[in-house]
Image (cartoon, rainbow, N blue to C red; front, side, top):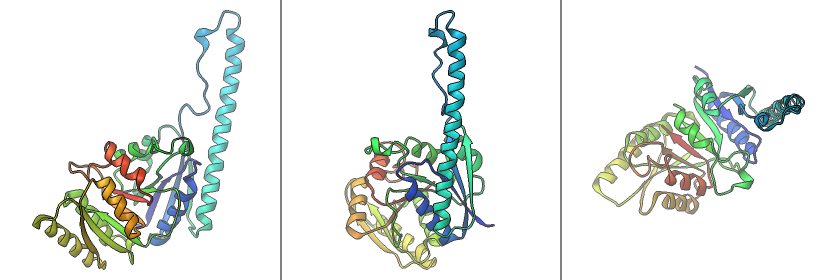
Length: 283
């Protein structure tokens, strides 16, 4: 079965990086791209003020509001098509031949759940269209999409750079082992340097888990390094990424341990917000 990328673009400052990451992924795994821009149901609509209008004014004003709604909806759709056209052109310029743009009206999560189908993974930017006005906040749709999808989620950072060195956050749990197995077998990671890290205190159990992870990666052709670092995961991992020059973080999403629970709540928000490299979240 041919591979497929399900990607979301919104015209924000992160969209160019999202497009370059899409092209990088597609080129490595030989995938086509389904490119989506989602217009919210309220896009192009106006507030219903009819209850505040006096008799005699209602008909005229309601007609003007309806006309304004139609104009706004038309402009929103035109903007959406322009965003898709620009994104498609950028991805194709990076060498991807098969890019299929889709303009959708509705909720982003519903779009993901309905349309992701047999996609290999989902790609989304770390922040959305209001990124420049809310630099300390993640995109409002990121966590919702990550919770809803059944696919791995690739979260693009603001600046694209070729990925050569991958850090895998590992706690020995099911999703962490799934992440290791994914890296070991998936063509996206072929030829990339890998390091497996556990955040915690050294112990026999930790050492055994890391050796098992290293063996799994070795079976997939990766001569991985293993490390144990202490501290809070969001701080320790961000520091390690910066110090050792890693270009991507791979981590399990959901679960009960500190690392696997990152996508839920403040720890994940802090991790993805402070991390300056793309993050691949495994379910």
